[in-house]
Length: 188
Image 1 (tube, rainbow, N blue to C red):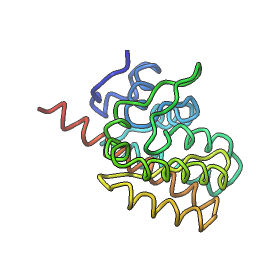
Image 2 (cartoon, one colour):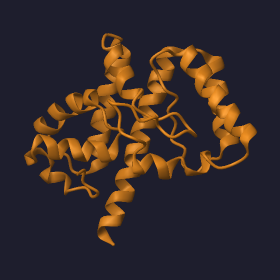
Image 3 (cartoon, one colour):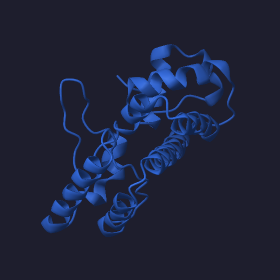
């Protein structure tokens, strides 16, 4: 069973591999590629806070974007995020939508059918424009209209490297928000 709280950041390097993976899965969408990228960072450095750890992961992911040599690994990580406004489809290899994603996207699954159809259409257009990627954004309480406008702008821009950068930034913003909420919940 996956953990539901974060251990003290100073204990992270001494945890078992599976315990570290559980922590990563709380902060990020579960993916073996992110686990293999983050594990050496966690084992080789000390962090004073979860934002410090997430910043190190962000830096490593942005290095991968700039090098352009590990695109499949990067796309696997970014593609682990569910489509906005839709429950993640469960397959033999996938878990269902994480509890964090359910809460973060709650308002995107509410609203009229026409908006839901447009959001599904934009998800499809985005994935056609950027094969291997999923649209990733830190929703942060924004509604469908604002998110769809952002999506349309990013599709129109058509810049793959910038999409990879935006996806990494959003993924890490989401992780920071999750860490903040999990740490606040554990002190109550």
